[in-house]
Length: 203
Image 1 (spheres, rainbow, N blue to C red):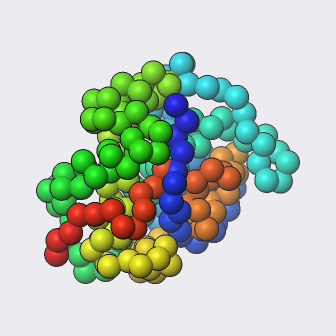
Image 2: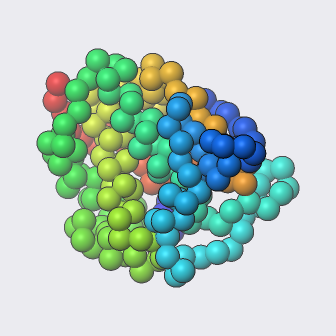
């Protein structure tokens, strides 16, 4: 299963070298002051995951696709979560649970095995992801769905504006590529996001 994304989200493009002295050493990325270590990224993968390297836009060889996918979603988790208070919105577990079925249906429709949360977990584990990772993957899709609905987004630009209010700078280790603000991704294939019409509501 290839973890694809059908809709795009955004932040600011920021490419920084993170190799060097602590706290940069061993960092995969920073989202604001939050550090995502390479050890954390690796912890969500098993030896079964593909290890084929990917060429970066500058021609250099980057990390393999699964590691990029994991880092991408860990970054998005931070950005989306911070966007709620930045826009004066509250977020509860009930909000996320309320859109779970819609998210799973959308993922299933896009070709990802997701008849249920357990089904999604089994499919992703089979592809080499740690059993803890599918919950993050699903949460990010839920966060996008809830945020887009709560702000009444009519376009990706509306979501971008909401995220910008969090004022978080994304710094990425160059080996993972560049953080593309036009696709919320670290590669040419953006995440498997839901359309802005899917829903969940609340205040």
